[in-house]
Length: 202
Ligand code: ADP
Image (cartoon, rainbow, N blue to C red):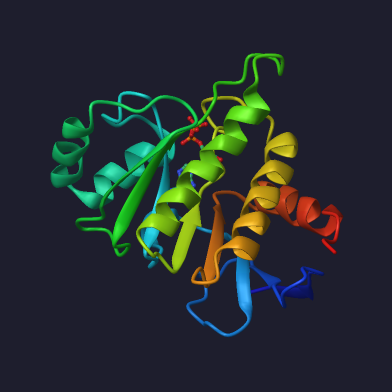
């Protein structure tokens, strides 16, 4: 497996690893942000994030994969939540997943870029991290929200995701690890390039 590592000039000693063809690392240490290629339903974390639709009753893509792996108890808990508007997030248990919790967030549908899509996507990440903080979670894994069926261009989504993750890592001292799980090598490359191009903070 190819392994790439580089330092990323965060104010705190945060760096990133990208593992191609290998499962996400469970090492702690100083690695706070990881970009990996893989299947988020296999990730052991305090929470994985679901790119859900506003019904929270399951769908295709990562949503379908999470519900299949978690089992029917997840759908039962989601029914009681009575949906979720775009940009907000709700937490459930993880049931049969290796992850302890699922944070369901509803991304924006891409409508050409003039319908506040970028702001709503940023709000998804902020809403997820608000729950991470509220529940004292120490590790969280994200898929690439909105860049599948919802059509948000991944080259535009990746810098927004990384900016919000960076801000959360700086703000939440208890948060030890954020993993972005990309489903294809091409998606991973887009996030790697966005991370390399991200402005250094302070
Ligand atoms: P959205 O409706 O928010 O666009 P999708 O599930 O259609 O959500 O796509 C979001 C991203 O999740 C896409 O890049 C898709 O390839 C990816 N994806 C699909 N299944 C998985 C999985 N099991 N693990 C991680 N990512 C996945």
